[in-house]
Image (cartoon, rainbow, N blue to C red):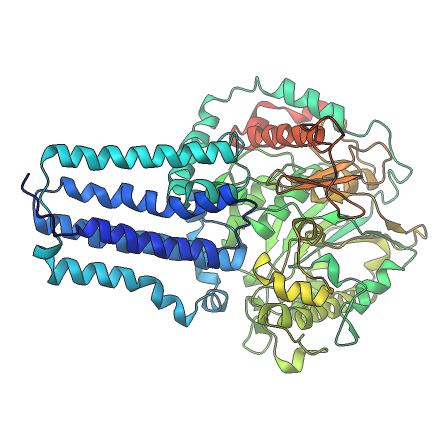
Length: 629
Protein backbone atom coordinates (compact mmCIF):
# COMPACT_ATOMS: atom_id res chain seq x y z
CA UNK A 1 0.00 0.00 0.00
CA UNK A 2 1.15 3.48 -0.79
CA UNK A 3 -0.07 4.90 2.49
CA UNK A 4 1.83 7.09 4.91
CA UNK A 5 0.74 5.85 8.28
CA UNK A 6 1.77 9.07 10.01
CA UNK A 7 -0.89 11.03 8.20
CA UNK A 8 -4.40 11.52 9.51
CA UNK A 9 -6.70 11.90 6.50
CA UNK A 10 -8.63 15.16 6.42
CA UNK A 11 -11.93 13.33 6.01
CA UNK A 12 -11.39 11.72 9.43
CA UNK A 13 -10.62 15.10 10.98
CA UNK A 14 -13.65 16.60 9.24
CA UNK A 15 -15.83 13.75 10.53
CA UNK A 16 -14.69 14.31 14.11
CA UNK A 17 -15.06 18.09 13.99
CA UNK A 18 -18.44 18.06 12.27
CA UNK A 19 -19.69 15.21 14.46
CA UNK A 20 -18.77 16.98 17.69
CA UNK A 21 -20.42 20.22 16.54
CA UNK A 22 -23.59 18.42 15.46
CA UNK A 23 -23.83 16.54 18.76
CA UNK A 24 -23.46 19.78 20.72
CA UNK A 25 -26.32 21.32 18.72
CA UNK A 26 -28.47 18.20 19.15
CA UNK A 27 -27.82 17.98 22.85
CA UNK A 28 -27.82 21.59 23.94
CA UNK A 29 -29.53 23.68 21.22
CA UNK A 30 -32.45 21.43 20.25
CA UNK A 31 -34.84 20.66 23.11
CA UNK A 32 -34.78 16.93 22.39
CA UNK A 33 -36.19 14.80 25.18
CA UNK A 34 -34.01 11.79 26.07
CA UNK A 35 -35.81 9.13 28.09
CA UNK A 36 -33.15 6.41 28.47
CA UNK A 37 -29.51 5.46 27.91
CA UNK A 38 -30.26 3.90 24.51
CA UNK A 39 -31.57 7.23 23.23
CA UNK A 40 -28.47 8.93 24.66
CA UNK A 41 -26.23 6.46 22.79
CA UNK A 42 -28.09 6.84 19.49
CA UNK A 43 -28.01 10.64 19.72
CA UNK A 44 -24.27 10.48 20.38
CA UNK A 45 -23.31 8.19 17.52
CA UNK A 46 -25.56 9.34 14.68
CA UNK A 47 -23.80 12.71 14.07
CA UNK A 48 -20.50 10.87 13.53
CA UNK A 49 -22.10 8.12 11.45
CA UNK A 50 -23.74 10.64 9.12
CA UNK A 51 -20.59 12.76 8.85
CA UNK A 52 -18.41 9.72 8.08
CA UNK A 53 -20.85 8.51 5.42
CA UNK A 54 -20.51 11.75 3.48
CA UNK A 55 -16.91 12.81 4.13
CA UNK A 56 -15.59 9.31 3.33
CA UNK A 57 -16.77 9.77 -0.25
CA UNK A 58 -13.78 12.06 -0.74
CA UNK A 59 -11.45 9.03 -0.98
CA UNK A 60 -12.88 8.28 -4.43
CA UNK A 61 -11.44 11.47 -5.92
CA UNK A 62 -8.06 10.84 -7.57
CA UNK A 63 -6.91 14.43 -7.62
CA UNK A 64 -5.90 16.01 -4.33
CA UNK A 65 -7.48 19.33 -5.28
CA UNK A 66 -10.89 17.76 -5.94
CA UNK A 67 -10.69 15.75 -2.74
CA UNK A 68 -10.00 18.90 -0.75
CA UNK A 69 -12.67 20.92 -2.55
CA UNK A 70 -15.26 18.21 -1.84
CA UNK A 71 -14.45 18.27 1.88
CA UNK A 72 -14.55 22.07 2.06
CA UNK A 73 -17.90 22.51 0.39
CA UNK A 74 -19.46 19.48 2.04
CA UNK A 75 -18.59 20.91 5.48
CA UNK A 76 -19.96 24.31 4.47
CA UNK A 77 -23.22 23.01 2.99
CA UNK A 78 -23.76 20.66 5.93
CA UNK A 79 -23.23 23.51 8.38
CA UNK A 80 -25.67 25.75 6.51
CA UNK A 81 -28.33 23.01 6.62
CA UNK A 82 -27.68 22.50 10.32
CA UNK A 83 -27.78 26.21 11.06
CA UNK A 84 -30.97 26.88 9.11
CA UNK A 85 -32.64 24.10 11.11
CA UNK A 86 -31.34 25.61 14.35
CA UNK A 87 -32.74 29.06 13.56
CA UNK A 88 -36.04 27.51 12.48
CA UNK A 89 -36.13 25.43 15.65
CA UNK A 90 -35.64 28.50 17.83
CA UNK A 91 -38.91 29.85 16.52
CA UNK A 92 -41.06 26.76 15.92
CA UNK A 93 -39.46 23.96 17.99
CA UNK A 94 -39.58 21.88 14.82
CA UNK A 95 -37.41 20.86 11.89
CA UNK A 96 -37.58 22.10 8.30
CA UNK A 97 -39.41 19.97 5.74
CA UNK A 98 -39.19 20.00 1.96
CA UNK A 99 -42.67 21.57 1.51
CA UNK A 100 -41.59 24.51 3.64
CA UNK A 101 -38.84 25.32 1.17
CA UNK A 102 -41.64 26.21 -1.25
CA UNK A 103 -42.89 28.77 1.25
CA UNK A 104 -39.94 31.07 0.57
CA UNK A 105 -42.36 33.84 -0.41
CA UNK A 106 -43.18 34.14 3.30
CA UNK A 107 -39.59 34.89 4.25
CA UNK A 108 -39.68 38.48 3.04
CA UNK A 109 -42.37 39.29 5.60
CA UNK A 110 -40.57 37.87 8.61
CA UNK A 111 -38.34 40.91 9.16
CA UNK A 112 -37.45 41.43 12.80
CA UNK A 113 -38.73 37.97 13.69
CA UNK A 114 -35.70 36.36 12.05
CA UNK A 115 -33.24 38.85 13.51
CA UNK A 116 -34.33 37.97 17.05
CA UNK A 117 -33.45 34.33 16.36
CA UNK A 118 -29.84 35.04 15.41
CA UNK A 119 -27.23 34.96 18.19
CA UNK A 120 -23.73 36.48 18.23
CA UNK A 121 -22.20 33.18 19.31
CA UNK A 122 -23.66 31.45 16.24
CA UNK A 123 -20.44 32.31 14.41
CA UNK A 124 -18.77 29.55 16.45
CA UNK A 125 -20.84 26.95 14.59
CA UNK A 126 -18.75 27.73 11.51
CA UNK A 127 -15.39 27.25 13.30
CA UNK A 128 -14.92 23.69 12.06
CA UNK A 129 -15.62 24.84 8.50
CA UNK A 130 -12.85 27.42 8.84
CA UNK A 131 -10.44 24.76 10.18
CA UNK A 132 -11.26 22.33 7.37
CA UNK A 133 -10.94 25.13 4.82
CA UNK A 134 -7.54 26.13 6.23
CA UNK A 135 -6.17 22.58 6.33
CA UNK A 136 -7.40 21.78 2.83
CA UNK A 137 -5.80 24.93 1.43
CA UNK A 138 -2.58 25.34 3.40
CA UNK A 139 -1.84 21.77 4.53
CA UNK A 140 -3.09 19.88 1.50
CA UNK A 141 -0.09 17.57 1.17
CA UNK A 142 -0.10 16.72 4.87
CA UNK A 143 -3.84 16.01 4.90
CA UNK A 144 -4.12 13.89 1.73
CA UNK A 145 -3.81 10.11 1.74
CA UNK A 146 -3.77 8.03 -1.43
CA UNK A 147 -5.85 4.87 -1.25
CA UNK A 148 -5.87 1.75 -3.36
CA UNK A 149 -9.27 0.61 -4.60
CA UNK A 150 -9.59 -1.88 -1.73
CA UNK A 151 -9.14 0.96 0.77
CA UNK A 152 -11.83 3.00 -0.94
CA UNK A 153 -14.25 0.10 -0.97
CA UNK A 154 -13.51 -0.53 2.69
CA UNK A 155 -14.31 3.10 3.58
CA UNK A 156 -17.58 2.93 1.66
CA UNK A 157 -18.54 -0.43 3.16
CA UNK A 158 -17.76 0.84 6.66
CA UNK A 159 -20.04 3.83 6.01
CA UNK A 160 -22.96 1.57 5.19
CA UNK A 161 -22.26 -0.75 8.10
CA UNK A 162 -22.32 2.20 10.49
CA UNK A 163 -25.52 3.66 9.05
CA UNK A 164 -27.19 0.23 9.11
CA UNK A 165 -26.14 -0.16 12.74
CA UNK A 166 -27.61 3.27 13.54
CA UNK A 167 -30.91 2.35 11.87
CA UNK A 168 -31.00 -1.01 13.66
CA UNK A 169 -30.61 0.66 17.05
CA UNK A 170 -33.21 3.26 16.07
CA UNK A 171 -35.74 0.59 15.13
CA UNK A 172 -35.08 -1.22 18.42
CA UNK A 173 -35.67 1.99 20.33
CA UNK A 174 -38.68 3.14 18.31
CA UNK A 175 -40.43 0.31 16.41
CA UNK A 176 -42.16 1.36 13.16
CA UNK A 177 -40.16 4.58 13.25
CA UNK A 178 -40.50 5.14 9.51
CA UNK A 179 -44.09 4.01 9.06
CA UNK A 180 -45.57 6.05 11.91
CA UNK A 181 -43.42 9.16 11.59
CA UNK A 182 -45.85 11.85 12.75
CA UNK A 183 -43.22 13.28 15.10
CA UNK A 184 -40.10 14.71 13.45
CA UNK A 185 -38.27 14.91 16.78
CA UNK A 186 -38.32 11.11 17.01
CA UNK A 187 -36.77 10.86 13.55
CA UNK A 188 -34.01 13.37 14.27
CA UNK A 189 -33.33 11.82 17.67
CA UNK A 190 -32.97 8.33 16.21
CA UNK A 191 -31.46 8.73 12.74
CA UNK A 192 -29.99 12.24 12.82
CA UNK A 193 -30.90 15.48 11.09
CA UNK A 194 -29.31 14.70 7.73
CA UNK A 195 -30.80 11.23 7.40
CA UNK A 196 -34.11 12.77 8.44
CA UNK A 197 -33.85 15.18 5.50
CA UNK A 198 -33.16 12.28 3.12
CA UNK A 199 -36.21 10.50 4.54
CA UNK A 200 -38.24 13.70 4.14
CA UNK A 201 -37.27 13.93 0.47
CA UNK A 202 -38.38 10.32 -0.05
CA UNK A 203 -41.72 10.96 1.67
CA UNK A 204 -42.24 14.15 -0.34
CA UNK A 205 -41.64 12.27 -3.59
CA UNK A 206 -44.13 9.61 -2.54
CA UNK A 207 -46.93 11.97 -1.58
CA UNK A 208 -46.54 14.00 -4.77
CA UNK A 209 -47.58 10.90 -6.71
CA UNK A 210 -50.69 10.22 -4.63
CA UNK A 211 -52.91 12.59 -6.57
CA UNK A 212 -51.92 10.95 -9.85
CA UNK A 213 -52.96 7.49 -8.70
CA UNK A 214 -56.03 8.49 -6.67
CA UNK A 215 -59.32 7.55 -8.36
CA UNK A 216 -61.93 8.06 -5.66
CA UNK A 217 -62.20 4.41 -4.65
CA UNK A 218 -60.76 5.40 -1.26
CA UNK A 219 -63.84 7.46 -0.37
CA UNK A 220 -66.37 4.77 0.68
CA UNK A 221 -64.05 3.50 3.44
CA UNK A 222 -63.39 7.06 4.63
CA UNK A 223 -67.10 7.93 4.55
CA UNK A 224 -67.95 4.81 6.54
CA UNK A 225 -65.44 5.80 9.23
CA UNK A 226 -66.74 9.37 9.35
CA UNK A 227 -70.34 8.21 9.67
CA UNK A 228 -69.22 6.34 12.79
CA UNK A 229 -67.77 9.39 14.55
CA UNK A 230 -70.30 12.08 13.64
CA UNK A 231 -73.13 13.14 15.91
CA UNK A 232 -76.36 11.26 15.22
CA UNK A 233 -78.74 13.73 16.85
CA UNK A 234 -79.10 17.49 16.51
CA UNK A 235 -78.24 19.56 19.56
CA UNK A 236 -80.72 21.88 21.28
CA UNK A 237 -78.86 24.82 19.70
CA UNK A 238 -79.34 23.64 16.12
CA UNK A 239 -80.55 26.73 14.24
CA UNK A 240 -80.16 29.03 17.27
CA UNK A 241 -78.31 31.57 15.11
CA UNK A 242 -80.18 30.95 11.86
CA UNK A 243 -79.82 33.85 9.42
CA UNK A 244 -77.37 35.77 11.61
CA UNK A 245 -74.07 37.23 10.43
CA UNK A 246 -70.92 35.40 11.58
CA UNK A 247 -67.92 37.48 12.66
CA UNK A 248 -64.95 35.21 13.28
CA UNK A 249 -61.85 36.65 15.01
CA UNK A 250 -58.68 34.62 14.70
CA UNK A 251 -56.62 35.86 17.66
CA UNK A 252 -52.95 35.56 16.78
CA UNK A 253 -50.87 33.39 19.18
CA UNK A 254 -53.42 33.64 22.01
CA UNK A 255 -53.00 30.79 24.50
CA UNK A 256 -55.51 29.68 27.09
CA UNK A 257 -53.28 30.24 30.12
CA UNK A 258 -53.76 34.01 29.72
CA UNK A 259 -57.51 33.85 30.41
CA UNK A 260 -58.48 34.74 33.99
CA UNK A 261 -54.81 35.11 34.82
CA UNK A 262 -52.57 37.96 35.94
CA UNK A 263 -49.09 39.33 35.43
CA UNK A 264 -47.53 41.85 37.81
CA UNK A 265 -50.86 41.96 39.67
CA UNK A 266 -52.78 43.02 36.51
CA UNK A 267 -55.38 41.07 34.54
CA UNK A 268 -53.91 40.00 31.21
CA UNK A 269 -57.24 39.83 29.33
CA UNK A 270 -59.89 41.79 31.26
CA UNK A 271 -62.35 41.95 28.33
CA UNK A 272 -62.09 38.29 27.39
CA UNK A 273 -62.41 37.44 31.09
CA UNK A 274 -65.70 39.35 31.13
CA UNK A 275 -66.93 37.31 28.15
CA UNK A 276 -66.31 34.09 30.07
CA UNK A 277 -68.93 35.27 32.58
CA UNK A 278 -71.28 36.73 29.95
CA UNK A 279 -74.69 35.00 29.70
CA UNK A 280 -74.56 35.32 25.91
CA UNK A 281 -71.20 33.55 25.62
CA UNK A 282 -70.20 29.92 25.40
CA UNK A 283 -66.56 29.60 26.49
CA UNK A 284 -64.72 26.33 25.81
CA UNK A 285 -62.01 25.97 28.45
CA UNK A 286 -60.54 22.70 27.13
CA UNK A 287 -60.23 23.73 23.50
CA UNK A 288 -56.97 22.78 21.74
CA UNK A 289 -55.28 24.13 18.64
CA UNK A 290 -54.32 21.36 16.20
CA UNK A 291 -51.95 23.20 13.90
CA UNK A 292 -48.59 21.98 12.65
CA UNK A 293 -45.98 23.70 10.49
CA UNK A 294 -48.54 25.91 8.75
CA UNK A 295 -49.42 27.67 12.04
CA UNK A 296 -52.10 30.37 11.31
CA UNK A 297 -52.81 28.96 7.86
CA UNK A 298 -53.29 25.51 9.39
CA UNK A 299 -55.84 26.94 11.83
CA UNK A 300 -57.68 28.48 8.88
CA UNK A 301 -57.62 25.14 7.09
CA UNK A 302 -58.94 23.30 10.13
CA UNK A 303 -61.78 25.71 10.82
CA UNK A 304 -62.84 25.93 7.19
CA UNK A 305 -62.75 22.22 6.33
CA UNK A 306 -62.79 20.13 9.52
CA UNK A 307 -59.87 18.26 7.96
CA UNK A 308 -56.45 17.94 9.55
CA UNK A 309 -53.48 19.96 8.33
CA UNK A 310 -50.52 18.09 6.92
CA UNK A 311 -47.67 16.88 9.10
CA UNK A 312 -45.16 18.48 6.74
CA UNK A 313 -45.35 22.01 5.36
CA UNK A 314 -48.51 24.09 5.01
CA UNK A 315 -51.47 22.70 3.08
CA UNK A 316 -52.19 26.29 1.97
CA UNK A 317 -49.01 26.07 -0.10
CA UNK A 318 -48.81 22.43 -1.06
CA UNK A 319 -52.46 21.87 -2.00
CA UNK A 320 -53.92 25.30 -2.60
CA UNK A 321 -55.53 24.22 -5.88
CA UNK A 322 -57.40 21.22 -4.46
CA UNK A 323 -61.17 20.87 -4.45
CA UNK A 324 -62.65 21.48 -1.00
CA UNK A 325 -66.11 21.63 0.54
CA UNK A 326 -65.27 24.39 2.97
CA UNK A 327 -67.33 26.47 5.38
CA UNK A 328 -67.22 29.66 3.23
CA UNK A 329 -68.35 27.72 0.15
CA UNK A 330 -71.21 26.05 2.02
CA UNK A 331 -72.34 29.41 3.41
CA UNK A 332 -72.18 30.91 -0.10
CA UNK A 333 -74.69 28.27 -1.14
CA UNK A 334 -76.98 29.42 1.70
CA UNK A 335 -76.92 33.06 0.52
CA UNK A 336 -74.08 34.33 2.71
CA UNK A 337 -71.48 36.81 1.50
CA UNK A 338 -68.05 35.58 2.65
CA UNK A 339 -64.90 37.64 3.16
CA UNK A 340 -61.59 37.50 4.99
CA UNK A 341 -59.85 40.53 6.51
CA UNK A 342 -56.11 40.50 7.15
CA UNK A 343 -53.82 43.52 6.83
CA UNK A 344 -50.98 41.58 5.27
CA UNK A 345 -50.02 40.95 1.67
CA UNK A 346 -52.26 38.57 -0.26
CA UNK A 347 -49.52 36.09 -1.13
CA UNK A 348 -48.50 35.37 2.47
CA UNK A 349 -49.36 31.71 3.15
CA UNK A 350 -50.62 31.65 -0.46
CA UNK A 351 -53.94 33.08 0.73
CA UNK A 352 -54.74 34.75 -2.58
CA UNK A 353 -55.01 31.31 -4.21
CA UNK A 354 -56.27 29.22 -1.31
CA UNK A 355 -59.12 31.58 -0.43
CA UNK A 356 -60.58 31.01 -3.88
CA UNK A 357 -60.44 27.25 -3.32
CA UNK A 358 -62.22 27.67 0.04
CA UNK A 359 -65.02 29.75 -1.48
CA UNK A 360 -64.39 33.26 -0.11
CA UNK A 361 -66.07 36.00 -2.15
CA UNK A 362 -63.46 38.62 -1.26
CA UNK A 363 -60.16 39.06 0.55
CA UNK A 364 -59.50 42.43 2.15
CA UNK A 365 -55.71 42.35 2.26
CA UNK A 366 -53.04 44.94 2.97
CA UNK A 367 -54.09 47.14 0.04
CA UNK A 368 -57.54 47.64 1.61
CA UNK A 369 -56.04 49.44 4.60
CA UNK A 370 -54.21 52.69 5.20
CA UNK A 371 -50.95 51.49 6.74
CA UNK A 372 -48.50 54.10 8.02
CA UNK A 373 -45.37 54.10 10.13
CA UNK A 374 -47.40 55.40 13.06
CA UNK A 375 -50.19 52.77 13.00
CA UNK A 376 -48.05 49.71 12.29
CA UNK A 377 -45.45 47.69 14.13
CA UNK A 378 -43.70 44.36 13.66
CA UNK A 379 -45.79 42.39 11.18
CA UNK A 380 -47.90 45.32 10.03
CA UNK A 381 -51.06 47.24 10.92
CA UNK A 382 -51.80 47.26 14.65
CA UNK A 383 -54.97 45.51 15.75
CA UNK A 384 -56.85 48.62 16.91
CA UNK A 385 -56.59 50.52 13.60
CA UNK A 386 -57.15 47.21 11.79
CA UNK A 387 -60.56 46.72 13.39
CA UNK A 388 -61.39 50.44 13.12
CA UNK A 389 -60.68 50.52 9.40
CA UNK A 390 -62.61 47.28 8.83
CA UNK A 391 -65.94 48.62 10.11
CA UNK A 392 -66.60 50.63 6.94
CA UNK A 393 -66.42 47.43 4.88
CA UNK A 394 -68.80 45.56 7.19
CA UNK A 395 -71.30 48.39 6.81
CA UNK A 396 -71.34 48.06 3.02
CA UNK A 397 -71.26 44.32 2.34
CA UNK A 398 -74.46 42.34 1.84
CA UNK A 399 -76.03 40.58 4.83
CA UNK A 400 -76.04 37.88 6.03
CA UNK A 401 -72.28 37.59 5.87
CA UNK A 402 -69.50 35.35 7.14
CA UNK A 403 -66.37 37.38 7.82
CA UNK A 404 -63.04 36.31 9.22
CA UNK A 405 -60.62 38.74 10.89
CA UNK A 406 -56.99 37.73 11.45
CA UNK A 407 -55.07 39.87 13.93
CA UNK A 408 -51.36 40.67 13.72
CA UNK A 409 -49.99 42.53 16.74
CA UNK A 410 -49.68 39.57 19.10
CA UNK A 411 -47.14 37.85 16.86
CA UNK A 412 -43.61 36.76 17.66
CA UNK A 413 -41.37 38.59 18.59
CA UNK A 414 -44.22 40.49 20.33
CA UNK A 415 -43.01 44.03 19.67
CA UNK A 416 -45.07 46.85 21.13
CA UNK A 417 -44.18 50.47 21.75
CA UNK A 418 -44.34 51.83 25.31
CA UNK A 419 -47.21 54.17 24.46
CA UNK A 420 -49.34 51.18 23.38
CA UNK A 421 -48.66 49.18 26.54
CA UNK A 422 -51.31 49.03 29.25
CA UNK A 423 -49.35 46.57 31.39
CA UNK A 424 -45.63 46.15 31.95
CA UNK A 425 -43.66 43.16 30.62
CA UNK A 426 -43.07 40.13 32.80
CA UNK A 427 -39.65 39.69 34.41
CA UNK A 428 -37.99 36.40 33.47
CA UNK A 429 -35.03 35.03 31.51
CA UNK A 430 -37.17 35.03 28.34
CA UNK A 431 -37.76 38.32 26.53
CA UNK A 432 -40.27 36.50 24.37
CA UNK A 433 -42.47 35.58 27.33
CA UNK A 434 -41.86 38.96 29.00
CA UNK A 435 -43.12 40.88 25.96
CA UNK A 436 -45.98 38.46 25.26
CA UNK A 437 -48.22 39.75 28.04
CA UNK A 438 -48.38 43.43 26.91
CA UNK A 439 -49.21 42.41 23.32
CA UNK A 440 -51.92 40.01 24.53
CA UNK A 441 -53.43 42.85 26.59
CA UNK A 442 -53.30 45.14 23.55
CA UNK A 443 -55.17 42.54 21.48
CA UNK A 444 -57.73 42.13 24.27
CA UNK A 445 -58.35 45.90 24.23
CA UNK A 446 -58.63 45.90 20.44
CA UNK A 447 -61.31 43.18 20.53
CA UNK A 448 -63.27 45.10 23.17
CA UNK A 449 -63.04 48.21 21.00
CA UNK A 450 -64.26 46.18 18.02
CA UNK A 451 -67.31 44.98 19.98
CA UNK A 452 -68.17 48.59 20.77
CA UNK A 453 -67.77 49.67 17.15
CA UNK A 454 -70.02 46.81 16.01
CA UNK A 455 -72.70 48.04 18.40
CA UNK A 456 -72.33 51.62 17.16
CA UNK A 457 -72.62 50.43 13.55
CA UNK A 458 -75.83 48.47 14.28
CA UNK A 459 -74.23 45.14 13.30
CA UNK A 460 -73.78 43.56 16.73
CA UNK A 461 -77.34 42.39 17.47
CA UNK A 462 -77.74 40.55 14.16
CA UNK A 463 -74.41 38.69 14.45
CA UNK A 464 -72.69 35.94 16.34
CA UNK A 465 -69.08 36.67 17.22
CA UNK A 466 -66.55 33.85 17.40
CA UNK A 467 -63.09 34.35 18.94
CA UNK A 468 -60.41 31.67 18.64
CA UNK A 469 -56.70 31.53 19.50
CA UNK A 470 -55.06 30.25 16.34
CA UNK A 471 -51.99 28.49 17.82
CA UNK A 472 -49.46 28.69 20.62
CA UNK A 473 -47.46 31.86 21.16
CA UNK A 474 -44.79 30.60 23.56
CA UNK A 475 -42.79 27.63 22.30
CA UNK A 476 -40.99 24.92 24.25
CA UNK A 477 -37.79 26.94 24.00
CA UNK A 478 -39.16 29.11 26.82
CA UNK A 479 -40.19 26.31 29.17
CA UNK A 480 -37.93 27.51 31.96
CA UNK A 481 -39.59 30.93 32.01
CA UNK A 482 -43.05 29.37 31.62
CA UNK A 483 -42.49 27.02 34.54
CA UNK A 484 -41.47 30.02 36.63
CA UNK A 485 -44.59 31.97 35.63
CA UNK A 486 -46.91 29.02 36.24
CA UNK A 487 -45.24 28.15 39.56
CA UNK A 488 -44.10 24.72 38.40
CA UNK A 489 -40.77 22.97 38.90
CA UNK A 490 -40.70 22.02 35.23
CA UNK A 491 -42.90 21.76 32.16
CA UNK A 492 -43.60 18.06 31.69
CA UNK A 493 -44.86 16.51 28.42
CA UNK A 494 -48.32 16.55 30.02
CA UNK A 495 -47.98 20.27 30.82
CA UNK A 496 -46.82 20.94 27.27
CA UNK A 497 -49.96 19.40 25.81
CA UNK A 498 -52.13 21.37 28.24
CA UNK A 499 -50.41 24.56 27.09
CA UNK A 500 -51.77 23.86 23.60
CA UNK A 501 -55.19 24.95 24.85
CA UNK A 502 -56.32 28.17 23.18
CA UNK A 503 -59.37 30.34 23.98
CA UNK A 504 -62.56 29.67 22.04
CA UNK A 505 -65.66 31.84 22.50
CA UNK A 506 -69.02 31.77 20.74
CA UNK A 507 -70.91 34.97 21.62
CA UNK A 508 -74.58 35.05 20.61
CA UNK A 509 -76.19 38.41 21.56
CA UNK A 510 -79.53 37.87 23.26
CA UNK A 511 -79.09 34.13 23.73
CA UNK A 512 -78.91 34.31 27.53
CA UNK A 513 -77.95 30.64 27.94
CA UNK A 514 -74.18 30.92 27.69
CA UNK A 515 -71.90 28.94 29.97
CA UNK A 516 -68.41 27.53 30.37
CA UNK A 517 -68.04 24.28 28.41
CA UNK A 518 -65.51 21.84 29.90
CA UNK A 519 -65.66 19.05 27.32
CA UNK A 520 -62.51 18.34 25.30
CA UNK A 521 -62.73 20.13 21.94
CA UNK A 522 -60.56 21.42 19.11
CA UNK A 523 -60.35 23.43 15.92
CA UNK A 524 -61.49 20.42 13.90
CA UNK A 525 -64.95 20.88 15.51
CA UNK A 526 -65.60 24.48 14.46
CA UNK A 527 -67.07 23.88 10.99
CA UNK A 528 -69.89 21.50 12.05
CA UNK A 529 -70.56 23.53 15.20
CA UNK A 530 -71.08 26.81 13.31
CA UNK A 531 -73.08 25.19 10.52
CA UNK A 532 -75.42 23.59 13.03
CA UNK A 533 -75.85 26.86 14.95
CA UNK A 534 -76.90 28.42 11.64
CA UNK A 535 -79.37 25.60 11.02
CA UNK A 536 -77.49 24.08 8.07
CA UNK A 537 -77.56 20.29 7.59
CA UNK A 538 -74.24 18.46 7.21
CA UNK A 539 -75.45 14.86 6.91
CA UNK A 540 -73.75 14.13 3.58
CA UNK A 541 -70.66 16.24 4.17
CA UNK A 542 -67.22 14.74 4.83
CA UNK A 543 -65.48 16.08 7.91
CA UNK A 544 -63.76 14.80 11.07
CA UNK A 545 -65.13 17.15 13.74
CA UNK A 546 -68.24 17.11 15.92
CA UNK A 547 -70.89 19.66 16.80
CA UNK A 548 -69.61 20.85 20.18
CA UNK A 549 -73.15 21.29 21.50
CA UNK A 550 -74.11 17.70 20.76
CA UNK A 551 -73.96 15.09 23.52
CA UNK A 552 -73.08 12.43 20.95
CA UNK A 553 -69.39 13.20 20.40
CA UNK A 554 -66.33 11.04 19.81
CA UNK A 555 -64.72 12.32 23.02
CA UNK A 556 -61.14 13.01 21.92
CA UNK A 557 -59.06 15.60 20.09
CA UNK A 558 -56.20 14.42 17.87
CA UNK A 559 -53.05 16.49 17.52
CA UNK A 560 -51.21 16.42 14.24
CA UNK A 561 -48.17 14.59 15.67
CA UNK A 562 -50.33 11.64 16.77
CA UNK A 563 -50.79 12.74 20.39
CA UNK A 564 -54.34 13.08 21.66
CA UNK A 565 -56.49 14.39 24.48
CA UNK A 566 -59.61 12.50 25.54
CA UNK A 567 -62.10 12.91 28.37
CA UNK A 568 -59.92 10.62 30.53
CA UNK A 569 -56.41 10.57 29.09
CA UNK A 570 -53.65 12.53 27.45
CA UNK A 571 -51.31 10.52 25.25
CA UNK A 572 -47.99 12.18 24.45
CA UNK A 573 -44.30 11.26 24.16
CA UNK A 574 -45.24 7.59 24.42
CA UNK A 575 -46.76 8.12 27.89
CA UNK A 576 -50.41 7.79 28.86
CA UNK A 577 -51.43 10.44 31.44
CA UNK A 578 -54.54 10.86 33.52
CA UNK A 579 -56.01 14.07 32.10
CA UNK A 580 -57.32 15.31 35.42
CA UNK A 581 -54.30 14.60 37.64
CA UNK A 582 -51.46 14.78 35.12
CA UNK A 583 -49.99 11.56 36.52
CA UNK A 584 -48.85 8.70 34.26
CA UNK A 585 -51.44 5.93 34.18
CA UNK A 586 -50.27 2.58 35.48
CA UNK A 587 -50.96 -0.33 33.18
CA UNK A 588 -53.24 -3.12 34.31
CA UNK A 589 -51.63 -5.60 36.68
CA UNK A 590 -50.47 -8.72 34.88
CA UNK A 591 -50.89 -7.04 31.48
CA UNK A 592 -47.59 -5.30 30.93
CA UNK A 593 -48.32 -4.53 27.30
CA UNK A 594 -51.82 -3.17 27.87
CA UNK A 595 -51.84 0.60 27.42
CA UNK A 596 -55.17 2.30 28.29
CA UNK A 597 -54.39 4.98 25.69
CA UNK A 598 -53.81 2.46 22.89
CA UNK A 599 -57.40 2.08 21.57
CA UNK A 600 -57.76 5.79 20.87
CA UNK A 601 -54.17 6.01 19.56
CA UNK A 602 -55.20 3.58 16.82
CA UNK A 603 -58.27 5.68 15.98
CA UNK A 604 -56.14 8.84 15.86
CA UNK A 605 -53.62 7.24 13.48
CA UNK A 606 -56.45 6.08 11.22
CA UNK A 607 -58.16 9.47 11.30
CA UNK A 608 -54.99 11.39 10.44
CA UNK A 609 -54.27 8.92 7.66
CA UNK A 610 -57.75 9.27 6.14
CA UNK A 611 -57.50 13.06 6.24
CA UNK A 612 -54.10 12.90 4.52
CA UNK A 613 -55.59 10.63 1.85
CA UNK A 614 -58.25 13.27 1.14
CA UNK A 615 -55.73 16.09 0.83
CA UNK A 616 -52.88 14.28 -0.94
CA UNK A 617 -55.25 12.54 -3.33
CA UNK A 618 -57.45 15.62 -3.84
CA UNK A 619 -60.35 13.21 -3.32
CA UNK A 620 -63.12 15.82 -3.18
CA UNK A 621 -62.77 16.22 -6.95
CA UNK A 622 -64.54 12.87 -7.13
CA UNK A 623 -67.48 13.99 -4.95
CA UNK A 624 -70.53 15.85 -6.22
CA UNK A 625 -71.70 17.55 -3.04
CA UNK A 626 -74.50 19.32 -4.96
CA UNK A 627 -76.48 16.06 -5.05
CA UNK A 628 -76.89 16.16 -1.29
CA UNK A 629 -78.38 19.65 -1.22
